[in-house]
Amino acid sequence: MQTQSTSTMTWDSWQPAPFEQTDGAPVLLHGEVANHYRGTIEAEGVQQVLIALSPGGASVFTALERVTGRIGDRSGSFVLQISGTTGGGAAKATLEVLEGSGTGGLAGLRGSGTYFCDNPGPDGHASVTLDHSFE
Image (cartoon, rainbow, N blue to C red):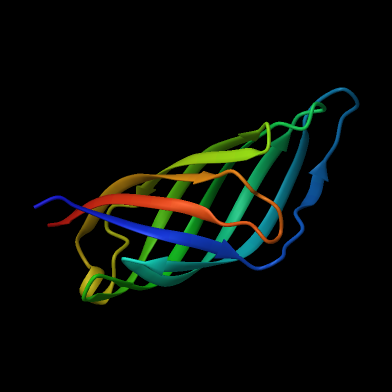
């Protein structure tokens, strides 16, 4: 049975660091950020993110995040594969549960979802929706 879980995600202050720069081309950055989920998903996450920041300020990013906590009445952890963009003061991404990554009560978790944030600064928050089921 497919279920939809929603949460508000906040994050700790973080600063991605450049690892490659070429004049006139996107700057490549890497960072680690701690995320906090509150809602149907009650969890903490640690995300490693790669960012390509264009000279105009928009970016594309990809990340892996281990999320540890609970979805509904099931507890454990799982890994999200994240792919997104930023620009115009907003960030949006697609989320995919990495197959086979669920542990404990979240073993067998499958799903995908979205992330949307219209205030991506240090005090921002995002809406997260995850459509999921269990094997």
